[in-house]
Image 1 (cartoon, rainbow, N blue to C red):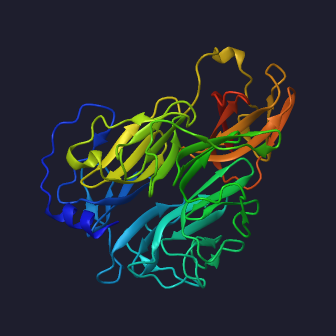
Image 2 (cartoon, one colour; image 1 turned 180 degrees about the vertical axis):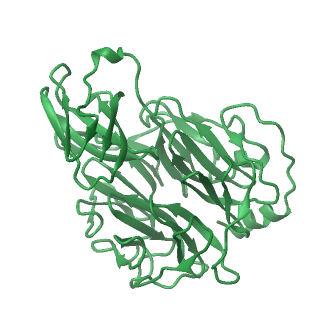
Amino acid sequence: MTTILRTLALITGLATIPAIGQWVPYNHPGYTSIFSSCTGPSAIYMVSYPNGVIKSTDGGTVWNPANTGFLAASNVQSVFYNGTILFAGTDNGVYRSTDAGASWTLANTNLPASSSTNYVAKFFKFGTTTFAVFSGTIGAGVGGVWRTTDDGLSWFSGNAGLSSNMTVYQMAQFGSALWVATNVGLAYSVNSGVNWTNDAVSNFSCFAIQGTATRMVVISTFGYRYRNYTGGAWGTWSTATGGPSNPTGGELILFDGKYWAITGSSPSSVLRSTDNGATYSAYNTGLVGADVIAQYKFHAGGSTLYMGTLTKLYSHTGTTLGVADDLATAELPKPYPTLFVDVFTVDLSSVKSGGSLVLIDASGREVAQRNELPAAPVQFERGTLPSGSYRVLLMDPTTGTRRMLGTVIAQ
């Protein structure tokens, strides 16, 4: 976040006007520069510079600071809920809260020192591992990716295989691998970030990455790009239309069956793709004032997409979460049993082979996937999935269209 934007956030007195459209602004007077947001049980959290973590427990009507325990003059950069613990990345280190933000304690065991130039800009969770991504280069164990499997009580480097000159911007999980987008290219891991392998044909700056088992989408120095997974390998890159030609940053999220993008360079609007990342168009309806050109980060919580901007936190309600309705529900196979312990089954005998089953958790994230499935009954093993409710989607191997099959509950 640049000093210029921070200064603008403090001195700009943009009037709040009634917003009619898809993006709906929250009213939080006095809180601007919304760098980060997340949702927890019955709560919304956001980071407002220089006010720290701000919390609402009534759906965004009333907001209050939640900073008890931070060191004085800590500039909070990110906030994240991993399903158990609340985390915050600051200039003075990583903090964790076990009481929904009422108090914070340092959680820096084994982590590099944080500073105004090297702090945790983003957190992610895939499976049972929570990842902290520092804003600085990997260097001599300074920046890059750090992992915890005990909710932040201890951390370990997740940079094995990554180059020392890399700055990691975003992580994503799809297919059977984790991916990182960095300033010198893409890398992937098949063991939860313990080791990484550089993607040889993606050795250019990538600022953001998202995807499915059959489609990968990036924001890169060469523009918005995509490629398909066919024949057991990722194909060549194609350039999308509608996005800036030479971005210098960006963020992507796959939500509601669409790719949502912010770039920070012309066009600096929020962009959205409804055709699997092939074309993009501006999606600004409801944004006010300078928020049309100054956005920071996305967060998906359940059926709601959140976005922090220069002056406000916005929400956008999802519709189908990517589920196509071109087939009658009765024609689709159903997962069974609905309540399962170790495995559930989907009889795919009535659909074409080669498709994928995708599991979506309560926060709207893709948490598991099985690909290239036969036209036969298929068992989906629970593996490390925690207890909870999951939507089961069937993804067409050719078009990438996803259809809702039903919901299962892991005991």
